[in-house]
Length: 299
Ligand SMILES: [Zn+2]
Image (cartoon, rainbow, N blue to C red; front, side):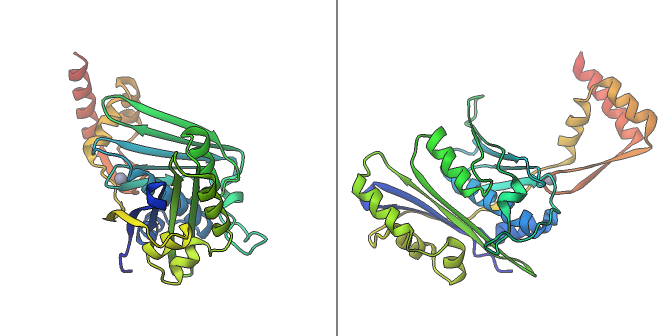
């Protein structure tokens, strides 16, 4: 599959409206392959990845980190995505193989898979121990509505969030979305024009599937021909930064007694990274050495 993923930021209505559009087809297909996601899990996780990727582009420095957790009462369980400002993303779905019948509109039933009782939790780690946490109840479990509710309740920013993932027998056919936010100086007239325009346009996945560019989508959504690009060529990537050292630290942090139990019971253990499914093996001798290292660190 060709990688045509892009995120572009625009201003519309002479700066009174901000819209960020994303094509995340390759990103979501990468995640689907890594986690062997079912179609409905692909749609749910793909929407979450897309919204997170768009939000992550607002972070300023490399040590900033965004974490998005979606936890509903549906069979999918918890979804978690983390991203830096690049944005480089990784995440997991608790039950990636969930399979459900299509909903009454013939679409993948994301709302049912996620469940509408639960919460959306967004943590912005701004470095230096400073973090901002916003937690809101889920509205529909369809993800886009849940993010819209988050922006309204937690950030007091009226927004329109559209997210779409089309899945076919080969995998992800198209994935993308946009987040439109109103600046404080947007007028009632601007809002009404956008609202009535939104009723006329196609879903974002359909527009991408028809081959619309992100700029064309931004124009369609805002009904403004004079939009300005403020940042382009942002490419979201799915990438895990795990390594054996990190898992060593995790094992040491279990404590001496817990490690001793593993040493007594196992010849070797295998730990799998939940973000990329890479496996790391530790032999009994390695565990014994880790335990010694842990002791040294205690002194
Ligand atoms: Zn990993």
